[in-house]
Amino acid sequence: MAGLTRDDVLRAVGHADDVTIAKIIASGATVTELAEAQAWLANDEPLMNAGKPLATGRARELVDILSEFEPSEDDEPGEPGRAALPQEQE
Image (tube, rainbow, N blue to C red; front, side):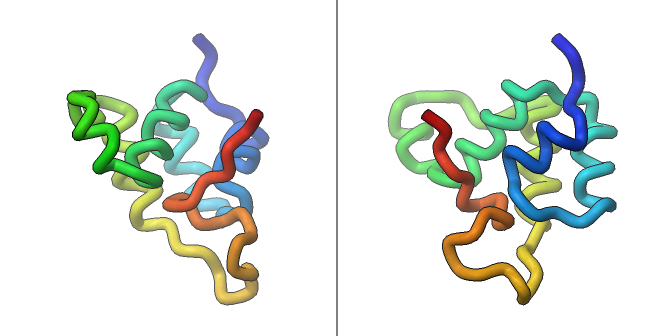
């Protein structure tokens, strides 16, 4: 599976600075691993209660990167940009 592109990252996390985007892409992660990391950040308790093992490997690396990511003060509440609150896609 192909690695992440800048567009993939921006679709997933909304607004992000170039350094954060570069770190995410440099991890070598896939879109699936990014989605897994976001799921852990958004709501880890139900995943743990369901018996899902903690994120490992590249997904864990993304959890670490995304947990450090903070939205700028220009971001409005509810606006994409905070990795801990990913938007669900239907």
